[in-house]
Length: 397
Image 1 (cartoon, rainbow, N blue to C red):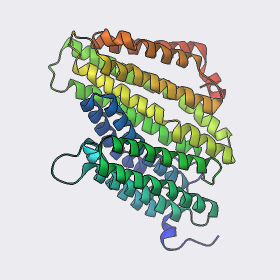
Image 2 (image 1 turned 45 degrees about the vertical axis):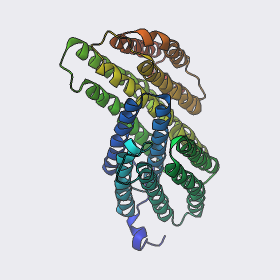
Image 3 (image 1 turned 45 degrees about the horizontal axis):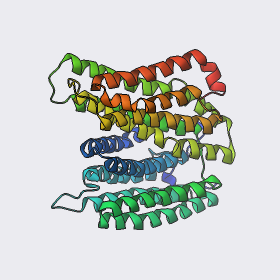
Image 4 (image 1 turned 120 degrees about the vertical axis):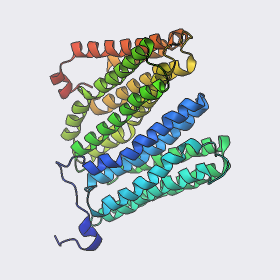
């Protein structure tokens, strides 16, 4: 093979043993800030309409992060052109994060918040595809795959810009349609396309790190909820229970599930491996992340009202229990795609959480949080007693 020259000399392909690089962890920091902005927006809105808005923005962020994860799997993200492109993307994504509070309600004066968010988002996506095209030089199939990905992006871009200009319900509808067009277009072309998965270990590690990032938001939510409150026994109890929720969510993913999924992905090869990665990670992990963010919102509300004797209320009960149920639902889909197995304990636990929402609405805040910890702890104990780690690694979710 002839040596690479010019800009191509600054692109280093990743190998089978490639792992996440420190630069990719640095890149994730802007997503930490963006996730915090989304949680703050949800806490301010307190409406189902606001939840839809927040989840749409979270989905847009998730799509960009997934794209750069696949790019970093193809070529090293800490070298040459890729690093330069991701620095530009970091700056643009930070602008997206800054604009999130005005993503749906433009503040008087200054630039249009929705339009700034959309333009910065499209810059992130465009840089990704341009750098990917250079990295794919010499691979005609991958170059074609990157080229056809521009089509759903450009259609979605028109919808996003129009929505940002119109505002209101039109913006929500057009943003949702843009997301469907983008995600569906990429999914359809990826199923039997020519994307390359060089390192399953890198892909699983990167997604595990994003789960950690989201769990970190649930810990931050405890501090946000406690801000300005005097130290008291109810506050300390709520804070400890909040940490307990984060630990449970971590346990349910990392104790066995993450390593079992990595083993399954390693056993697959060729197009089957790519399809598995697209289904279970690129798309299948979004419900997990969304569930963690919503649960963190509920934890923040409980801690903020730890000393109250008033009921928890529908908003925080739905965020807390509904978010955890969505997280478990994401696990069910993930496990079924990876292992073709439906986890009965997780299905039952998700059902219990949804059924318990009416009771949580009338419970004191700390009692509602304690109930969630109890259900998640019971699930962990049931799974630990039912399956050994060795059996999990072979087949179980």
